[in-house]
Length: 169
Image (cartoon, rainbow, N blue to C red; front, side, top):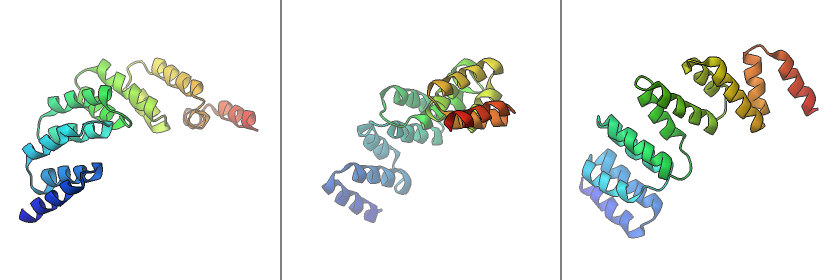
């Protein structure tokens, strides 16, 4: 324990973002000092991943509602990457509130357009055709031709894939 506290003291002398993250990690994972971790973490909530780290802490400690609350706050206030927050919120609501879960699954798809996320959206959706139309429309708007081609191959619309290839030539 004394060694970790000495390391924290030395890290505080430099006072950089990386050092503060290491201090949080030491309190959370090595000293198991939840109060000190929370004290440090609350000073460092700028990015989506900061909020995700805090939400995950609450989830790991059995406070799932608090985790979702923090994740939702991170969606609004956090900068940068938010897909992990969307995933956490989706997982919470998928068995509790269909509309909220669908909202966050759509956000996941918007943040990371891929065949896998398209499949997740369609499998989860109660209105598969409507969600498929929404996703395909978004992909066309964003000119995500590679993902569109993967989806069309997956769904057997080979003529569309050929059209993408011919239009690219």
